[in-house]
Image (cartoon, helix red, strand yellow):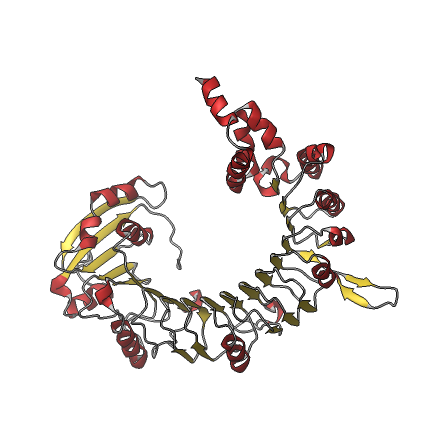
Length: 520
């Protein structure tokens, strides 16, 4: 029987075995190496795999021993050097901060370039401050490049004119499709041009970067994360290092735009956004200088606004295809209240208080205008499409579900997470997500033939009882609202005062004692 299994495995095409190895390698090199026991053919192919991914953190026994780690990598790469085998992908992840490691990275990088590497990723430890060597300019075959925590120096020509190494690298590697630069230093001005194949560009937290100009006619995704100036932080709105970002083309190809900690103003952002007619996904995070957002885009499908505190207004004009909206703020600002959400298929709205203020507000202490606007906004969704409204109150770990949205009443608290989605196709997954909150109470305003109450049966409950983390010890089912301390809980008192009380089915949960995080 073993021989039959081995013959079947040995008979698989090499490219399929390589693909299997590539997928298994996501779980660590050790797991992938264990598959070499399957057959003699598999061992041979394993040793000649084209993707080499080395993560120091997955090898705890050698992580703190530089000599052992270097020997491990050398032994892994030796067959490629001896047999002149191709290395299509080289990933060096989680490298320690040993200063002596830099020369070894240079050697491994050199070898990969000689063997025509196409995809290269280096994540050295931040303490290392690894400087990119000149050998990188010979990597003519590169199509993917991901460098994190590296230092780019200045090249001096014979006239003593300086050129940034990253700038020169871009000009010498014309086939790059995917370029990711994160937490790198030594870059002040960057012009990304001449890369006609570039589809994905990500620039993240590069301290010292003050200007970016992008000319990439086929760009599909652009991610920019600014560098917060933590040393000058005096308020919760972190001061950002100024950086100008100008995208000069790719107007009909850019589909995904993500900006975080950008210092763009209202006018600069509106001008940039107006050019991208094919944009489908827009994510804006901590862009504190943008006060008013105006979006005019017929193809936009997903719109995310995360960690905002001073946004004044969001205008969505001519966006008929918008189906997904996500908003998160540490203050109860609601700039989206004038939006028309009737076409949305799902939305998530998260108002959270920072730890210093989480105990400063009592249940019922809300601004009347904000509260009324929120109720009005939630009522504008098209619930006839099967949408369900879920309200999670973080102060009391309670969930209120509107399966019948004919009358929506929002709990009067500043700590709310609201989800609107259509769970009809994945109801078990939907209820699983609800249970992952580990609520104390789940109150359901059910429709005549409730789907959620049916699915939250012993099958789902038993599954959570069996989980090692957050095990469910007990569940009880009640009609109306109930609480074990004779109604002294504000959540219970509020529910009892509403017109919902007679239509509510309440599930009470008791969980194994485990520390809870304040925010999900």
